[in-house]
Length: 245
Ligand SMILES: C[S@@+](CC[C@H](N)C(=O)[O-])C[C@H]1O[C@@H](n2cnc3c(N)ncnc32)[C@H](O)[C@@H]1O
Image (cartoon, rainbow, N blue to C red; front, top):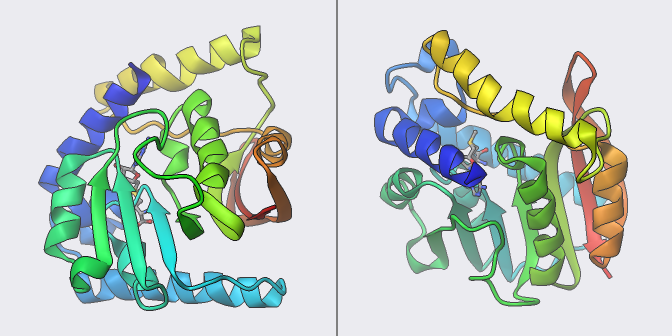
């Protein structure tokens, strides 16, 4: 049920203004993103991510990569420059349609819609690298944490996951705090946004200690949890790098 809202919102955004839905810069509204500039940002991001792996003394095999929450493929296309085969997964069919239109790498790049709360359509130990930025944050914690566990199932031993997710106060699954959180961040936030005429995009957080527990319990070894720019109220955007043991 919770994912239905996310899917509906991004399907609509993907139909209207897909590049702006991914990077919402004021001047780029109404389909005014220059695609070259947009995709160049993806190349820059992936190049710094790979540099970061080198700085951490981590070596990634360049066979297969997954871009989770790929949108129009801004990062997927960039990953194709290093990896032999790249899969981009997104909950929104309209985003995947746009991603296919922008694909410059033929069959080496495949886009798929995934609207379930797991990654069952992907095999165990099928990837060397999993990357995800500004995507997990749009999914409620009970599902984003499930996806994180899935990253370590689909990674080969020695494979690397790098993903972004904001951290905030800890709400343990099933607790009273978690129930209040779901209400505030789900229906109430969507209503508030609609009343202001904005798309009902949800932004979620999961406390860093919970993310680290999930990584460990899923067979991963955390290498780095790095603050990634913005801090808003008690929330901070984090980027995690972990190796599948
Ligand atoms: C802000 S865009 C970022 C796209 C891409 N990661 C990038 O940085 O260019 C967020 C994307 O995450 C996707 N998304 C949100 N929830 C998702 C989920 N549960 N599973 C897969 N994709 C999801 C949305 O459809 C949207 O395309």
